Image (cartoon, rainbow, N blue to C red; front, side, top):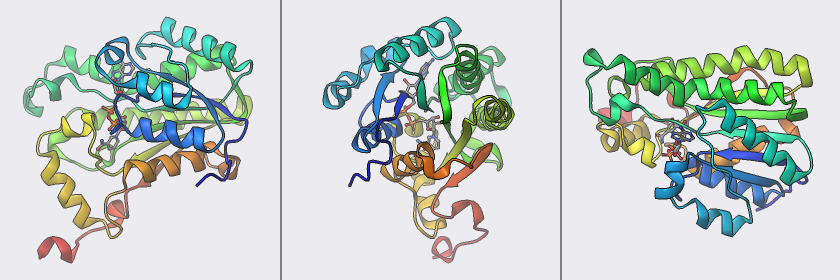
Length: 266
Ligand SMILES: NC(=O)c1ccc[n+]([C@@H]2O[C@H](COP(=O)([O-])OP(=O)(O)OC[C@H]3O[C@@H](n4cnc5c(N)ncnc54)[C@H](O)[C@@H]3O)[C@@H](O)[C@H]2O)c1
């Protein structure tokens, strides 16, 4: 159902790979709520993913961009502003990838060059994006910048490996750059800490299906779906949350506040 919460707003959505992607649902919800968007992903993901289908459905141009490249980020921001004929109201950073997890390395035996790559893709890209937008003055007053995180930033989930540190870094960038964006243009910067979700990135984590079931039982409202995450993103892109910034916001059906659940003991 559309309330036109984003009517007239323009934004960039990173990270839609296939219909399971959280960013895919966010893109659909943004357009349903009246926004105009551009879609972006790494060139390699454009070859293997299904982004063209989403682009056709939403009439949203695709602009390839490896989020670790400042040059490509700047080109994406400039091209998006050209398409919209204006600066941006919102950006979603929905990017995560761990080389060590992919290569099934144990946490006690990580390859540190790969770790640098993981941090660059999953966290430093967020700083690069915000810095590029800051330099180009690409955001409108009262805009909103969001990234997706996970509770492994605060608690230990052994199989999440170096992605835990990536998320801790990501959340810290949101707080630190959130200050500068607020002072410059009243732009909000937040992270949403989302429930485990059945996506390509999620399923890449060892034991994910079992853990998904555990979290479902541990959360009084159950796991938050990608669709409900999209709804939450819409609220954070809308003017209704214009005073929320520098926060890590749990969107997890209550998981983060639980100590013990009788559902698990059963
Ligand atoms: N799935 C989960 O359980 C879960 C839970 C909490 C948070 N998250 C976070 O949500 C976000 C989206 O992940 P998802 O679960 O929708 O999975 P996904 O695999 O659909 O999305 C990850 C995206 O990152 C993109 N990406 C990787 N390297 C890139 C690069 N160099 N430049 C640009 N894009 C690049 C991929 O192409 C892909 O589209 C990630 O930050 C992830 O960590 C996921």
